[in-house]
Image 1 (cartoon, rainbow, N blue to C red):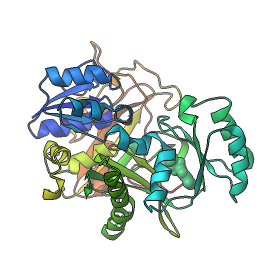
Image 2: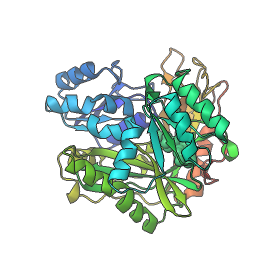
Image 3: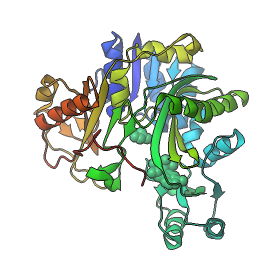
Image 4: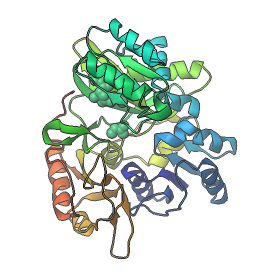
Length: 418
Ligand code: AMP
Ligand code: GLY
């Protein structure tokens, strides 16, 4: 198949790598220094992407990031008859609007934290009285993973509301703000490939969100991941599918907007049972960099089956063993990542048996250079988690660039909720 992958991060390199491995011809827009068939069209240039897919006789488009999904790229491609794997804008609103997402959970009976949505500072301040302890304060719209503040006390919650409504730190993403009961427990993620009311759970993957070892330091997009995650046994995984994935799919289908694509549920395992914190409408990054290497099936077949309503005919098969990925981030990440540092040792890491996925990289005459916050994701696959982790770190040891930051405990500590 002629496949176009939209996006330019580590997740998109993993998609392109997995598709290429199964014999497909792959293009990436815009891609990065590691991806094949790069075409310089931005992931948010909807018209440019539709034109590219038409003129390139693309048979399947796979959309990696949330922004083009929320903006309606899949709808635009469907309107001209190009099969695209990913949710429509109506479905991507589950990630694009936390207010919509909370409504959906309540309406369709998904267990979640109690919440209230507010649209002004005054309303927000008044609503604080309704919580026994300071609530989590969330910008409703897309904020590149930074729009959630977990304050320790009421003063912190008030400051968060001011940051959103007065200082406008998140712009229009905080026109609506969700205040949510703070939950305690262990965080897990469950991802499924979905098509209408059919879904297939992906191998459970766990990411490490904090920058530093031992889950210290600021939140990031994710500093590493491993799969299968032992936190979720088969029984709990099935329960989460029944209670967190299926009701949303049925609700969206009944509403006339069936969900096609990956649905990612972020949950807190509380003493009272699993509670959904958020939905994402796409594969996780770096979760994709451990899930795709373990998928034995051709991802294009799985994605196309979902687009064409044939997912019910498939069972997914997985490679034995485990995968771990260690993210190498630029100096200054996450606040002010430095660009332009020369990266060496990728071939040596590959020779050590790793798959090195590029993220924020760009090409230069001397070789790849850093060009974004998360620079590389170094994945190792092994007979078990220890072997996978050891292989990933052997790859990391071979790679260097000035100021590289990475965690030393990926897959070695199971992240606790914070
Ligand atoms: P979200 O994007 O909604 O998943 O929030 C980002 C992070 O904030 C989560 O991964 C949690 O660590 C934390 N968080 C979100 N909601 C809550 C909550 N209700 N209680 C405690 N922590 C939360
Ligand atoms: N790693 C978390 C995410 O992709 O949202």
